[in-house]
Length: 417
Image 1 (tube, rainbow, N blue to C red):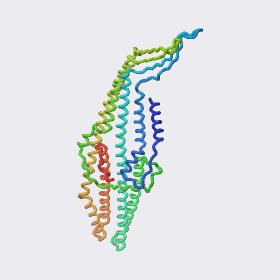
Image 2 (tube, rainbow, N blue to C red):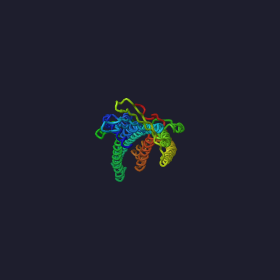
Image 3 (tube, helix red, strand yellow):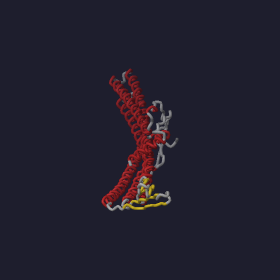
Image 4 (cartoon, helix red, strand yellow):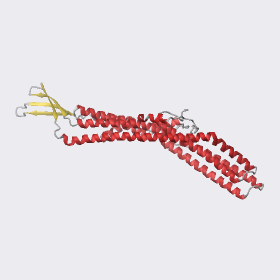
């Protein structure tokens, strides 16, 4: 079986012209294009596509047909010639129901691989969109760190001005210098995170290493898009998920396996046909039909049946486990989505405006000498932390919405292309 599968995979690759080569990335890589490239380039998807082809081809090997036998015989050979000669064609095959059940079992196994391929397509799409989200998040954090650096430089100017007029101490300047150094370190770390996020996206796409250029532009943005997702609606589609459908299809395949095991106890059929020559030419014919009686088949047949039944029960329990795992994943993704959405809406309604206003007033108050440096530093830290929490919540919101997209089978974010 393994040899046939390997040969089928080889023939499939040859028919397709060898392994699929990765496509070069465009200069602008949006979400839609990234998903398209991933579906074409993904080694996991292409490997499973070949496995589906192999499983479809394997169905033709299940009928239990032996290679026909062609034999030549001559009897009664003596000094005067022979009494009879014949050419015999013999064929043996399993009882018809046995081959039928094996074919249906193999057909269901191929269908199960199709369901797995569908699940992997959805997972690949979600993985690419989530990787793209992390790239956009890393880019926003890099912008935030650039803003932090600009604030640190402005703080240096403000402290220097007050130091010149004697309203600040050298210690204040040292604190401002430390803030500037920390801002530069944070910016360097943010840039590294952005580069790492790019590489993760390229890996999710399956992009050829030679096409992974620094010049690639990511045109999409990480902006809050209100999406209403009903938890019950997501859970209502539980049995429609390809993972569940795959498990159910494997249960059906195992059921045919039980029938095939029972049917294997039935006798095999043998047919033979031959033209006969009694010295006057092949002018008479004969045939023979018989069955092989599985007299000792009960010795191992019972074991095969019990094994097939146990596998059928195993597939049923696996289906229950898949349902439970998916239900948990859907509920957890929905609760994370709901929590991050509340954080974002609260930030948009109150925190963002107040944090920006507080920072502006504090900087002006320090410039006028009404507020000390520690208060300004604390306000700047509060402002930056609130911005960071917002982007973290926005990232988590996108990640969880994309996860729920997979179960709802519809695009909810990055739909404008």
